[in-house]
Length: 118
Image (cartoon, rainbow, N blue to C red; front, side):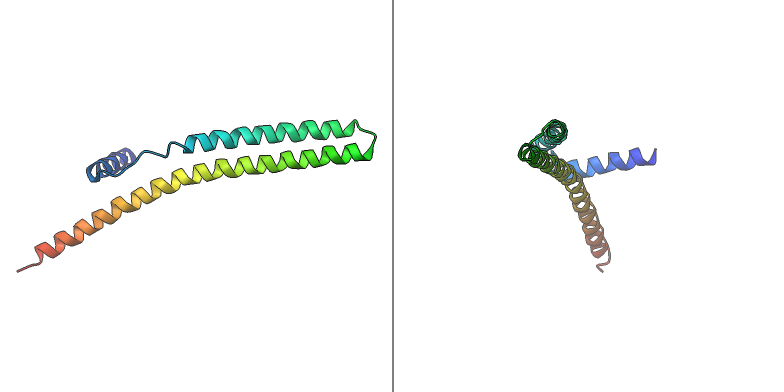
């Protein structure tokens, strides 16, 4: 129950300060693009590797292995895009929390200074 109270208090503080809390409209697109690239890369590398096993000419085998390596690179790129979008969302929330806490501390200091005046 304490977690729900803290979450409600955080939302209230953010609303009171009128901070922009919506995520970027491109975050979801980057995550989906990353997932698609990962899937295409894994499937493509698997197909290229399996096709290379059926070849007799070493030049064809080398070409399929290069293609499999390119699909592996595509998989890594997709993972990087997905991870970047996910980390961006977490960092945005962390920064928002830091702003709210900093404002709360500033308000406490200002109140203490006002109360300490003679």
